[in-house]
Amino acid sequence: METWVENQHFLQDVILLTGAIRRDSSKDWGYVASKVRGYLINVYNNDDPTLKKYFKLAEAGNNACGRKPIKEYHPKIINEDGTYLIGKTHKVSTALNYLPELVRKGLW
Image (cartoon, rainbow, N blue to C red):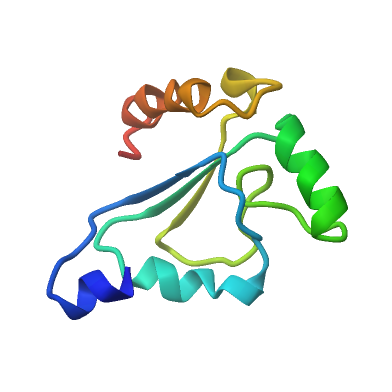
């Protein structure tokens, strides 16, 4: 994203689906959100078995933004619970089915 901004290219929205990135403040989510013109939308799935297992083993109890809301508040960060639609899977093809729901809700 920084390279894009340096080259005068801009992102309108960023949507994280099944994101295997730590959700805590070490990622400076507010800074990331400030670099997009629109919103940083984190679609998370509490029932994601892959992220639950990986982060329990490798990240010592931390959670991924694909499984929980991003902890940092910023007006451009939207945390959207997609658990009921995505279910107990980590398939990107299933997570993509949530995109029409973002449109229906007027978030994207």
